[in-house]
Length: 464
Ligand SMILES: [Zn+2]
Image 1: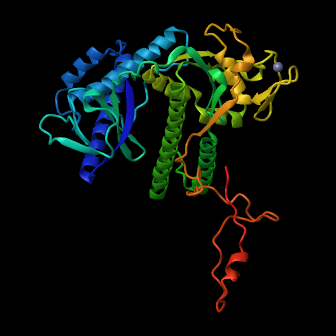
Image 2 (image 1 turned 120 degrees about the vertical axis):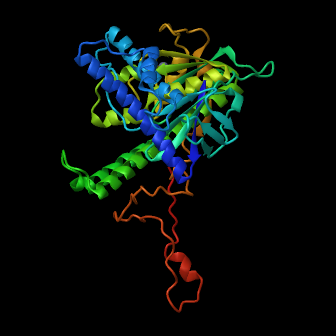
Image 3 (image 1 turned 180 degrees about the vertical axis):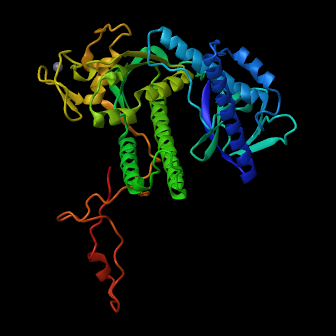
């Protein structure tokens, strides 16, 4: 199952109706929460099963939830029921932090399953309650899956924008004989902040996907948000007070920027994962062994480092990679990554964690890229923490390294598009050339072309 998010092109009336559907779904959600609270107060058991909730819904009768039809309303019930049982399962497993659904939301995504909607090209008909005019919406691009593979569509919003998520059952890729991934060919994947994926493959080949653009995006967004917050802090409504119109505008803007930031990061992480899979497929790698760093995240590391880890989202990186690997017919194994970046891949002895990107072993003199050292060590780790030392390891450390960049679409990643959030970092510092700016117009009366060149002849380019 694969999911793609597609934007919508809507006329104002369609937009209103779509938001109406989301609001109605939010009402269904709120009704379920209220009903169960009411029942709890009277000592009655909560209704949580999907079938039982559907019975309650049909008892409410038609027309209770505006445009929303039964199938849409049922998708909200399904969501509630799934969330409730997932929390119950975690709680019986001993996780007391798991919570049952209890928060109301004004807008709730609505999912429509196969057979209830019509998708022809870019036109999508969403089912609506009986007696309402049909609702056709237009997608802003062709869905990436053939229409007959689409299993469900989900209408949702992000800030003030509407999207549909198209979920399809995509068959596993097929290869011509002799080109299919070979499960015996193993590559180790090290997840990192600077390099979201560092892959050490067989035959001395490696791949480094750079995440510097991603990190810059996270950093700029955080800084930008901080400035904005500071600028409007004194307009914030006090508790119990209604916000001013200006405050509401600020909040809408903030939500929009937040949503855009999330979209950018997600897109870049997907691109990074795609590059790994493409690289692996051309090298017939059938097993990707990924070091799972999530155990490390439980540790408290201070507020700066915590923020860094939140931006990193290794769980999402693993999920992306797993989805794409499955589709390409590549097996993905998670192994413990502890110590993988501080062990020498040649002599196997522990080395203090390197400060820069370069790993150096003081025992045998080996030196190589730090993230690829992690990948190479992970590739040799079995699932059950067993370390296989079969062939000579020197052959395994990547010497041919492919470099790829994630997030090339991000503003500021290329010289063509400067990120408007970035402030001139040299400023008026001593002896700094300052921000790049066009040459001033020639002084009046001057006719010589040479006068234009020298004044600001030095051209600063922003690299990295
Ligand atoms: Zn060594």
